[in-house]
Amino acid sequence: MILLLGLLAAGPGSAHTLQSSLTEVSWQPDGGRLEVVHSLHLDDAMVLLAALGAPGGNLSLHTEAALMLYLERNFTLSVKGQPLTLQAVGAEFRGDYLWLYQEQQVPGYPHGLTVRMTLMQEYFAAQQHQINFVVGDRVRTLRLDRITSQGTF
Image (cartoon, rainbow, N blue to C red; front, side):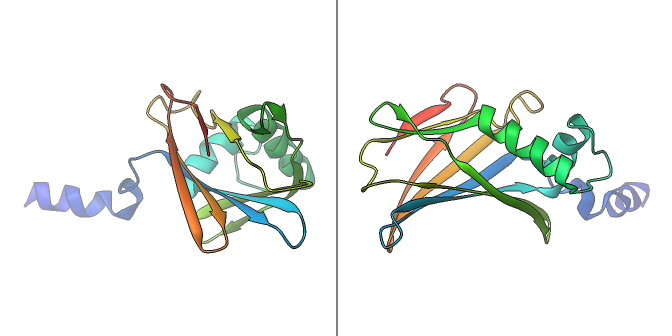
C-alpha cells in the first residue's frame, strides 16, 4: 500500500525522464528560405531558463534574446562548409513545450546541409536530438547526441 501511494504521489511530473529535443528544418522553395523550429520539453526548458537567469520561465524580450544567443552557440547549419546565419524569429510556450523559431534566406536548395547540435548537453549528459529535414512531403532524420553532435543531409 505504501509503495502504491508513493507511485501515485510521484504523478505525471516524474514521467519525463528522457532529455531530448526535436528540431524541424524545412526548405521553402517558394520563398527561398530555411525555416527552423526547435521544441524542448517544459521540464528541460525550465532548467535552461534558470541557467539563463529566468528561473520563473518568464519569456521577456531579455530572456528571448538570451535563448537565441544560446541557440546560436549550440545549433548551427552550414551548406557545403559555409555557415548560415540563422535569424531569430521568436519563442513561445505551447502546451508542455518551449518552441524556438529561426529562419534564413538561402539562394537555392541547400545541398550538403550540415547540422551541429549541442543544445542542453552541458545540463544533461544523455541529451538526445532528433533533427528532421523536410522538403515537401519528404522527411529525412538525423539523431545526434554528445558522441555524435554533427551530421549531414
